Image 1 (tube, helix red, strand yellow):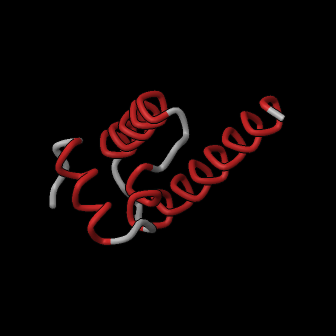
Image 2 (image 1 turned 180 degrees about the horizontal axis):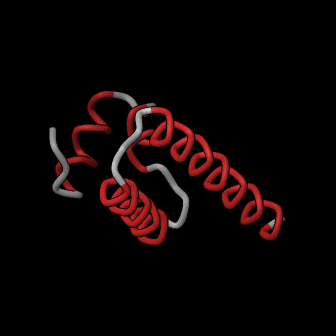
Length: 76
């Protein structure tokens, strides 16, 4: 189960990066910007380990969401 979950998260990240690369190429972003975007996404992935906290919090009831954001020092 753990291996499947890890593989699934990795596949989602690969799909996201592929879509991001396509978008950057389509918009003809300069290489410097592309590299910065890639680096940001890699760092965010490493910090979050593939979990999208903002999406998880968004689905919670408003009071609980506010309390969690306050506790984590996120924008209210």
